[in-house]
Length: 281
Image (cartoon, rainbow, N blue to C red; front, side):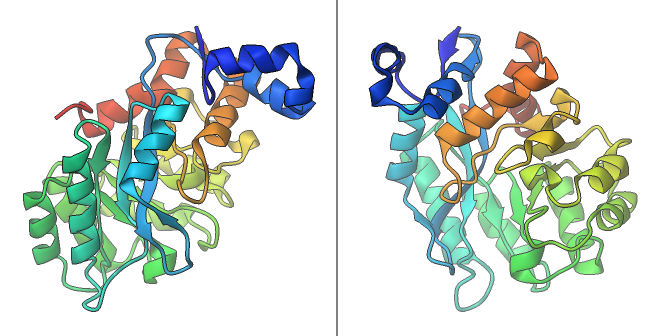
């Protein structure tokens, strides 16, 4: 077993002197225990400078991953659509970051389904993208709408999973994603934030689709413990979230829900790599 989120030696010293940590921090660290053979793969990271000011550079991401025992991370652009609105430059920067950090950063591209997207997908494929991120709130589209269905169909035909923002400002989503899945039933979807805000409806709407996963980034603990662990993938939502808190949330969910070691391995990395393929190119 190993501790997550901080170096075990540091935590041991801190445990001997609780003045170095608050009681809450000490309890949090004790919950972050996983088997030694569990690689940690983050499903949800934004690189670049978002329109709301949140920013994350690739080197800073990798340093944070190293500090928290994270093996690899799926990364996609922040909300930087560019002058043409097609995320071309932002997608290329993520692809370049993946080349600079092979095996550590897994590049997904991002686009706006309401704009022509075939050329953007072709460019992202050529640059090495392995999946697609869509944000219905930021880009103002409906998951079940014709434009989104078309791009999910295209991504699925390319063998890509599609990660959706799901929650935090989104409208009711159960019927929306049910409508999308009726039209693209073979889509591999990752619904972010555990579907927070419409979790029950989303869980019901996707129950018959085993290729739909939920990431744990900034999710609600009561939502996570009601989902089967084989449907969950670890996510941080960097730079909005952070790895230490994200790992703590998974640790607490594992204890509350009674996940065994195999389930923990799946949530932390196994379920995601089954969806996106091996981490190392």
